[in-house]
Amino acid sequence: MAGGTLIVDTSFLGDVLCAEPMVRAAAKRWQGQPVDFLASPGGAHILSGHPDLGDILVFDKRGAQRGALGLLRMARELKKRAYVRAICSHRSWRSAALLRLAGIPERVGFDNASASFLFTERVSYQADLHEIERNLQLLGGGSWQRPRMYPDAGERERVAGLLPGRSFVAMAPGSLWETKRWPAQRFSELAAALSAKGVDVVLLGGPEDRPLCREVHQRAKDFGAEESALHDLCGQTNLRESAALLEKALALVSNDSAPMHLGVAAGIPVMAVYCSTVPAFGFAPKGEQDRVFEISELDCRPCGIHGKRRCPEGHFRCGWDIQFEQVLQALQPFLPQTSLPV
Image 1 (tube, helix red, strand yellow):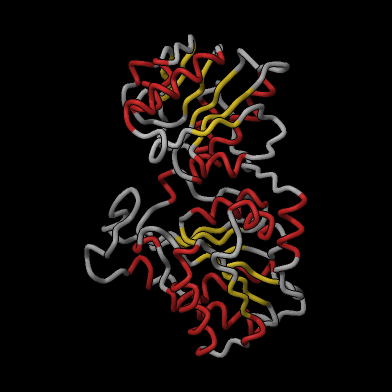
Image 2 (image 1 turned 120 degrees about the horizontal axis):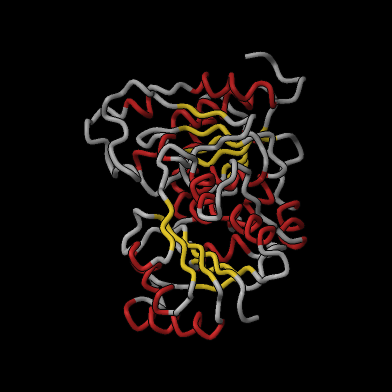
């Protein structure tokens, strides 16, 4: 359908989920007008089934649509759709240039975005706000709200066949950056402690996380966990299936990584372990039942926006100094009442 609003964020999973509340805000503000979303292939996957979205457009900027030619082709596609306005939470020059090339008359983005001069309206980027609240400033403002995903019946049915028969806590030990990973030993210690309480543990992650999840699984057994209490589903579910699975979990223990955002969207308590990055970046879970763990007094934190491959200081205290007992204690209110006390 021609006209309407295009929301643009072709960045990482967490960024797209933090942009999702803008979809609902735009649909409410411009009732009766279509709201579309331009995302990366992964972002389009997690937005599928959204009741307030019309078309979800894919911009494969790292693949088939990479380079100047891909940018021009995407711009032509957007121009055909004759959008009235574009709301761009992605702060890259490519996104700003794309919307200008597409000739969209109203182009709203952040004032600190690359090539922000290509926007017709520049909104102040407020670093002290949560990313969701920052994004809502692009539509005039709004308070934090939980992002949403919409797994379909088939995805829920498939996940139902993978679930353990007992109550479980989900764990996601992986991250693309090593210094964002709570040590595998800590996850294993926590898994063993939960097993001793009669609570199962489900390990989640992508195919690239399989070696790490195998290590957590094995070391948890070394620490005394029952084999029957450990369920390694790493690499067996896609993002939407993982979200459906998380809806059934008592809670999620995760690093500052993609599964953390899935847990927030699933509406369960999220125990977020922040090693080399900091909640002040604006992406930490903010629900009443969510908890964040960090060693705030370390002067070397944060060591980068995304973390590092190795600890620059050589000690990785931001990970090792967070003890599994701290997380176990925070989990206790969400465990079955039959569980033994900490």
